[in-house]
Image: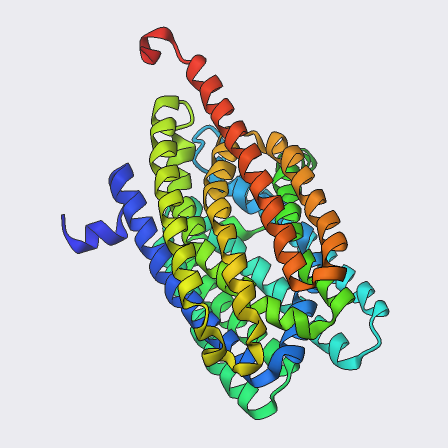
Length: 428
């Protein structure tokens, strides 16, 4: 097999998963490195207070955009594998809904400005909202490439975005040293990536012409609702703690907390990318329960071993944080050593969530996960006033552990039911 065939064509399930995994890890790996390097530089240049303020505002802007996808992107990836639908019309309807949702989210941000008095905060929030508008529209094309199992094209988009973010971001930060300059860098990098996305998608422009048929939009809203609510839960798990921490303890502590959480989320990208690469193939095998169970067992074992190794490595390497971002971030070291163990639960949950989604059990997953999210919020309000950022970390670990236990049980039950439904000749 030639390198051209191995890395740029889809010939077999194993080769396609390998190809997709390679390009996802290469693109996201390089991209995350660029972005992470910029954020470390931003943390050092801005200091804990301003860096915390940026992350605080980013969390608020993201809150307004929670409903801007509504699970549409994930539905496109899953349903594109179904040959019984008119794929182009389906995607055009999804594009129409996406445009409506993004427009509503942006208007919500403009309304939210009434609650801010600080002019710098207002300007930053508007700029971050513009970034999220462009990001959402660009991401729709990214998800189409994933649906087509053409992750090699996504590689170039991620690379362009994060390389330009690093160059422009560092330049503006060194000159102006404020959060507005960092926000402008985010916008500029996403515009570059979006322009490249349109160029790479030129052969499928007809897919982007929006449609608004009522029946299809209602179906997308119905099927996407549980995915959207799961996204809301994800936001509650990983962003509301910074909002609550900022309100109750100030943006400086958010700065300490943000460094630890960004490293943890970067590590968790490994599990997310693996499942992103595998999911199109997993979705195509939902009628072969034995195959899905085999994938489940191997992936779960790999995730547990890998997460334990990375948690230990994180504990041992934590002291380098102040050396990289500055001595003022010393309080982040002990927090990170404690907080890094959350990945032992987060890695397997990525697998469980995709298993439940593959079997169209989004609502089942949502209702149980929502209980964990509510517990997380309650614990944040209970623990943060007394323990600060350690209280926020404790709340997240407890909630994520409960989510792990429940999701593990649900995914095993769903696969067991699928196995029982097979004909006796196939189940023997």
